[in-house]
Amino acid sequence: MEPYVLGISAMYHNAAAALTCGGEIVAAAEEERFTRIKGDASFPINAIKFCLDSAGILPEALSAVAFYENVSSKFERILTGIVLNAPKSLPQFVTAMPDWITNKLWIENKIRKELGWHGDFYYIPHHLAHAASAYYPSPFDDAAILTVDGVGEWSALTRGVGEGGKIGIQKTLDYPNSLGLLYSAFTLYTGFQINNGEYKMMGLAPYGKPVYEDRIRKELVNIASDGSFVLNQKYFAYTYGLKTFRPEFEALFGRKMRQKGEPIEAFHADVAASIQAVTNEILLKNAETARKETGKKNLVMAGGVALNVTANGLLRQCRIFDDIWIQPAAGDAGGAIGAALSTYYNITEARKQATETDRMQGAYLGYEIKNESKTDDATLQQLGAVWKTMKEKDLQETAAKLLSAGKIVGVAYGKAEFGPRALGNRSILADARDPAMLQKLNMKIKFREGFRPFAPIVLKEDAGNYFEVEGDSPYMLFTFPVKPERRLPVQTAERVEDTASLPRSDIPSVTHVDYSARIQTINENANVFISGILQAFKRLTGYGILINTSFNTNNEPIVNTAADAYRCFMRSEIDYLIVGNRFFEKTKQTAKAPKGGW
Image (cartoon, rainbow, N blue to C red):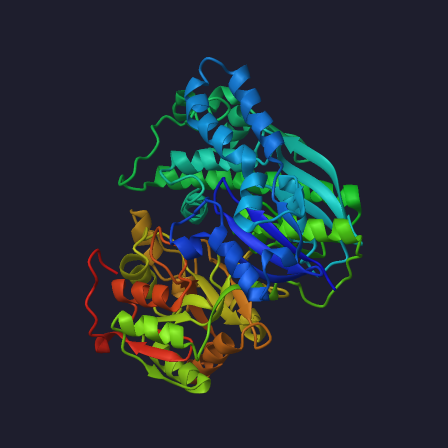
């Protein structure tokens, strides 16, 4: 019988659990989806229960449990920093130590107690978990491996190789030299929240020019030819304090950091463009070095920085490697998958074989909404929901017709996606041809900054009609240029938000200011239901492309259950909702908001 292995990531941010059997992923989910607390870092008891229930097993059926980092080594790094920087590190000591002493250092005991687990337990080093999450689910039998994030135990960047089921780490770049922490410092400086706003700054960067790029290279980071680098700690405070950067950082750019609610100006866009340019350089140099060191033709990537789609798109465009595969849950949540798979391949010494497609199952690994669920029906009735049941083909045709008429449709169908991207099963869909749709979605549906772009979902066979793209892009992890013949002349406005609204192609609501798009390609093999909606939309309009954005509002996790979807539907201006085979029309809902709102 093939062994079940449970992987867990927790206690920092975005806790998750993943269950594997015989090297295949059975289920994976983030704790936030169940608790409805964005980025929930707490022990993922709900996600663990979901994974075990998905396999129909109890904890005693597990062969092993693995945690995604070595907590003793991480504690050593934090304590070392506090000691070396005393007494100015006292605030960090007072804040961090109680949780470490009473909670984090005893994670194995907590896991054993919560699960009643007495079997084998493994600590997997943080960057090895990232490497495993990228290599083992990839379609390659051998590949170069690049992992980049803020910091694990000590490592912040690793280069390595995967061959036949074995992973070897060849190069590490250790804390405090961290690309993730450098990028986060600029995230905070431009007025966004660390660990939540990096993608916002990435979206802001194309509105600016990299006018501070040389200043960053000269003062903040010294980049070597192999991609390694040293950060000038004169400007940073994360090694000893609760703040990320020192006043010298602000002085370097001549302005204080943007505070919440303050306008986004051209200056902030220029700063964002500048750090993005530096990030691109560091990742490209590391990729070039990884190719030389390993001789491998394929690259796999993980770690939070691997979610930087702009750098990923450039890396793919440069053709350093023949092919690139990135773990769609590249952040810490994906470490749960890596911990489980690393453990399986170590205890069994199984060989990894190349496969035609990756083993992530489209990332559809989470909670499943079923068509004939009496429990869901009862919950929706308790909320006062009104719906009608429809056949799959009728739902697809109806959705396409409504979308072509400018309506917005929420979809909660089948298994939820694992990771930060909605890939059709927990998505909000809209017409990419409508130039007003970008601001409508940002302001009235997502309740977020008006400059932020939306991603397209496009039929795989049609992607080349709209974008300069080769191959597949199923996980929204790369940007691609919109084809020149579809572009409209460059326009700008005084305000960043106004510039965002100006049409730049015949698919304006998915064309970013630099004529790029973070695309998801789809076909029937990947997702029958969403592919059917796109096919029906194409028959009506001639366009096999739609806006696909995550089904949530600002600062809330992506919806998980039928009830989550209905509540989000009712508190936003989404016009229609599909939950499994149930169809909801906003104008026909008579439910009143419960105390505290939806």
